[in-house]
Length: 148
Image (cartoon, rainbow, N blue to C red; front, side, top):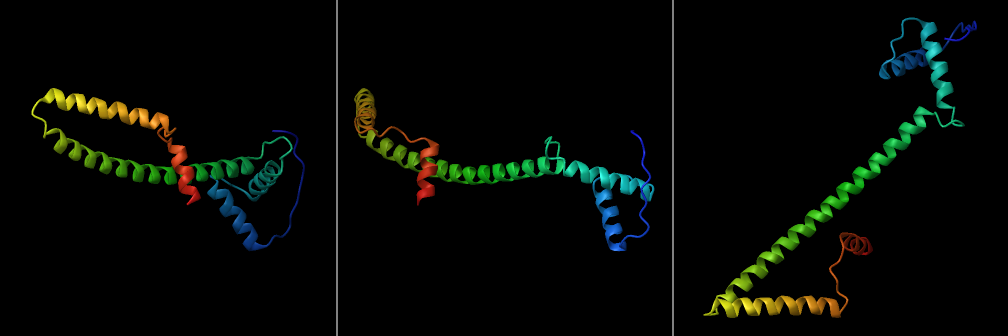
């Protein structure tokens, strides 16, 4: 520790003093004497206002909490949209599988069914390419959802 300077405070508002003690206790500071309390308060106050060197723990904690809150909110929103999208996709795939199964069971020769399936797949891919209907990214879907 550095050189000590004598500072004296005779009286202080009781509510303010109790509040300082509660703040120090909530931050895990063990205060034994009133001098310890006021030394801690002054050091904490100086640190809090030492923005020039960006050593302000309050500012850093506030920035961190804002970023964490925004991230959690975004993750929750995206997670909900992703869940909805995946559920809808699973339902549609199941419907298509049932249609394909019924249609393919009409063939007597399995090779004909496979040939038609391969043809349908190739035609679908070419159709998507020719119309510039490439599959959308998840971000495209989110942007559309925000516009609605």
